[in-house]
Image (cartoon, rainbow, N blue to C red; front, top):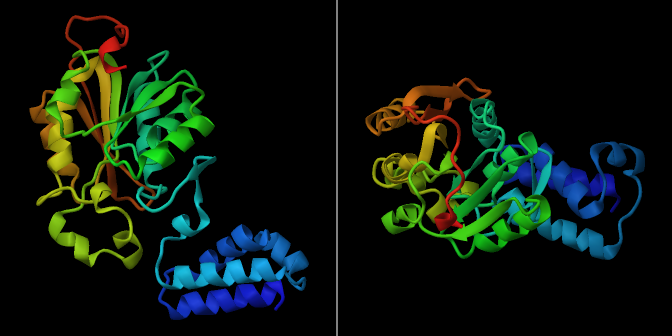
Length: 299
């Protein structure tokens, strides 16, 4: 078959399988396995791939038809211009998370060299995204999953410039939080698990193939937000920023948790669909001026 015929076959197969965007997914598989962009397909679609390319492409199409996440099949996914390694065991980066990164960068505008933590880091998308906007950023990416950790390390090696470092640890652990000095950080950011446990079986088939450890936010979906507010927010210096991605119905509840934890200037940011997506706040400014040096305890 020609490349164009393979693309059409893939689109039809994915549409029949119930994939939400069969044309887009077929095009991305064509690019990933046949090395043809949409433009390349228009110009060279009548060419015939090698037997090895065709076999790999058709296998990838069947994997996608089985609702394996496209990101896992490709092994790479772009986030804010960065090619991130992804695969089974790590949460797939999503465009919604750009709202978290941009909110963080905006609220840290007056901080000359932000130093902080990316909690539940997964691929490292949040810290690395911030680094693209604020090249002076330094951070540690805290991740519990030993399955996700290789992807995190690979992405930090590619894009972290030695300024973003991995840290294996549990965000729900009080001793881990206590290993950092209070007031020692400019920011704490997180895209934590926030789906209610009871809602997990109703998720899209693709999402159900992502690690439950990265999805399950406890009975009410707020387990990790409580930990961030109570254990991690106190690590932020006066005037520093705590920012988290949220589910679209969680804005008021997370804002209340942040308020009860003593954070000020609470803001809820919307995504491109107009849905609540990020809650952020500042640590009380008090009498301290300027950011303190990072604590060596967390290094």
